[in-house]
Image (cartoon, rainbow, N blue to C red; front, side, top):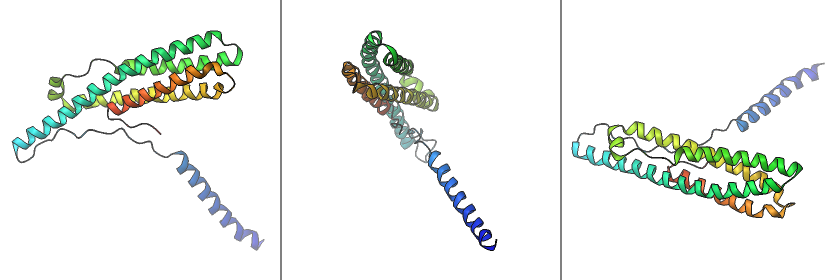
Length: 196
């Protein structure tokens, strides 16, 4: 009885460490989107203030423009990818058809996200009037680009798992790879980070 009483605290300590390690592993934080430097508030020199503020405005303007152009390019690639997915899904049967339908749904999700960000961007005048609001718009677009990227990766995973047994999916797999790369470039254009 004395020996089992000594083993009990050790067993409890080992259990706590194991559970704590598992909790840490499964709750690792995702990287936050890159924030652009805020427009300077009020330095001592008003001339420096104007120059720094205009530089921040231009950087934000460039990020919004570049991201929007890349999102439009990504949408164009996605149209070709979706067309091929629809053609393959129509020819497929059974489990292959179900898997391609799931892949197609993910492509539609990515398309909705990209459509939401391949739109008109705030003008330089809008950015000048409300820098914080324009940067929030950029961050919203980063989130949509992340959603598109993740949906495309998941769709690729489905097709990739089937491609070995179904050589007819090679073109779709290649188009999905291009779509993923375009979504990554869109994220980069908006100064976002690719999710892990």
